[in-house]
Amino acid sequence: MKVSVTTIPLEELDVDILLIPCAEDQRDELIERLAELDPSAVDARRDFGGALGDSVVVYPGGLRATRLGLFGLGRESAVTADTLRKGASTAAAVASKCHADTVAIAVPDSDIDDEAASQALVEGFLLGSYRFDRYRTEKREDYEGPQRLVVHAAGNDKASRRGAERGRVVSEAVCTARDLVNLSPDEKTPQLLAKEIEKLAKKYGLDASTWDKALIEEEGMGGLLAVNRGSPEPPTFTVIEWRPESATNDRPVVLVGKGVVFDTGGLSLKPTKDSMDAMKSDMAGAAAVIGAMEAIARLELPLYVVALIPATDNRPGENAYVPGDVVRMHSGATVEVLNTDAEGRMLLADALSYAKTYKPQLVIDVATLTGAAVVALGSEVAAVMTNESEGAEERLKLVHGAGARSGDLVHPLPMYGHYDDQLKSDVADMKNVGGREAGSITAAKFLERFTAYPWIHLDIAGPAFLRSAKPYRPVGGTGFGVRLLVEVLRDISARASR
Image 1 (cartoon, one colour):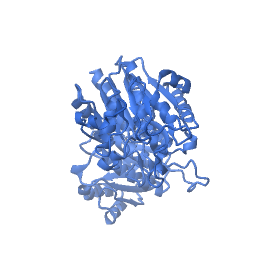
Image 2: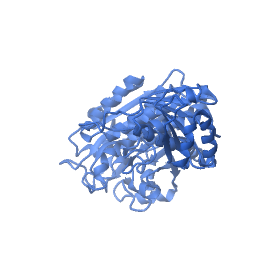
Image 3: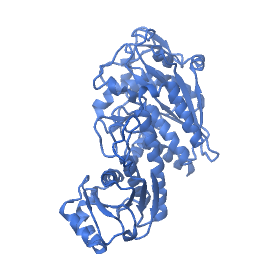
Image 4: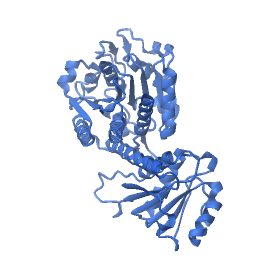
C-alpha cells in the first residue's frame, strides 16, 4: 500500500473516504467543526458515540471526499498510541467495507506527538488491512483492499512523515512475519525457509548464509540434530547480519529465533485438536526475528545486529530421539531428554551457545516456547525473563518500555535460583523439562545455562498465533515481536548515539 502525508485542507482531499478519529468526549465538538465544512456531518451524531470500535459513514456534499467516516477512540484521557492503532484498524475495516481504493486518515489533536501518532495510525490501518489469501482458489471478491493511504498532518508535517514512513516499513515487516507463519508446512521446510531468508536478505541489503547438516554436525549442535532425527528433512542454521558502516557498536546485538517449522511433539506426541493443528506457528519466533531484520535494514538503523535461526521440524520418525536419550549439546553440556515435545529449548540452547562466539553486548531469543506462558499471561502478552546478573533490571525496563510503545506487550516473570533445582538430572548435567510447576520459568532457566552474556528471553506462545481476531491482529499468525524488537533495537541505537 502506498503511504503519503499531506497538509492540504481536509475539504480538498480527493479520496474515496476521509477517516477522522474521535474521542467520546470530543464527539459533539468535532462534529460541529466538520459541519462547518459540510452540513451532512451532523448526521454522524445519530449512530456514533465515539467508543473504541465505533464507526459511522456519511456521504458529504461539501467535501471532495466521496465519504466521510468517523472512528472512535474512547475517552480522550485514555487515548494512547495503541488506542490509535486499534482505532485505525477499525477504520481499515470501514474503508474495506466501502471498497475504497484511496483513503485519507487524519492525525488527531492529542497529547501524543505527531511522529508517534502518525506511526500508530499507519500501523493500525495497514495491519488491520492484512489478508492471507495465498491458498484461496477464488478471491473473496474483486476488491483487493485500499491501495493508497494519505495521512493528514495538522501539525508537524516533517514529524508525521517520519512516523508514517516508519509505520509503513514496520507494518510490512510484520506482514512478512505473518506470511511466514501462515505458510503451509510443506512450503516452509528448513531448506525452503532458509531460501526465503536469503531472498529477503538480498532484497534488503542483509548478509545471510545457511549451514547445511554437515556444517551443523561439524559445529557439534547436538540439540538441533537430536530434534531433527525423526525428520526426513535435514536441519538448517541460518546466520543473518546487518552491519552498516555507521554502526555505533562493535559487539553486536544477537537475535535468536526458534525455527521449529512444524512440531508434532515427536514421540511425546501432541493431541491434534487445539494443539498440533496450530503447530505450523512454532517458528513464529524465527519469523519475528526475520521481520525485525527486514525492518532495521529498511530503516537503515545504525546498529550491528546478528540473527541466528536454527530450523527443523519435530516428527516421530523411525530414528526420532526418545525420552531417556542423553544429548551432548554445542556447549559440551549433557541433557537428559524426558519429553521430546520440549524441543524448542534444545535447538535454542545450541544457538545461544554459538552466540558466545560474537562476544555480544546483548542476546535476545524469541520463541513460542511453553503453553505455560499462555496459561499465565493469555493471548495478548508475552513473557519476558532475563539472567539475574548486572543490568537485569535495566534490561527488563528496556523491553517493557519497548512493548508499551509498540503495542507488543510483555510482562516479566521471576528467575530465582531455586527454579534450577527442577532441572536436576540423575544421569546428566540437566533435564530438558522441569515438571508442571512454573513451566515457562524452568524453560528459561534451562536456556540460561547456555548463556554467558546479558540475555533476554521472550516467550511469545500466547500472542504469536490467534484463533480469534483482536484489533489489528488477525486469526493465524500475528507477527508479534517484530515491532517489539524494532523498538528495542532503536532504543539501544539511540542510547549508543548519545
